[in-house]
Length: 71
Image 1 (spheres, rainbow, N blue to C red):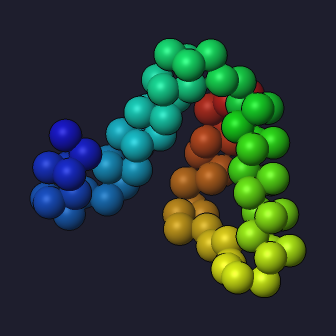
Image 2: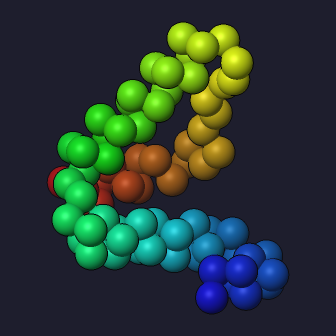
């Protein structure tokens, strides 16, 4: 579904669907937002300390939307 939406160049709609998919997966697997945040922080720390890679933010404009939704 997300690939179809992307094929029509509806990037904003695809990003919203990706966020919805993530939320559903988190609920199914009983993962809290705090746990996800801690996991992401740990990954970022490991990548930065290894010197072998770089963490990048692909969609910073959607980050504020995700934060507003979680409150």
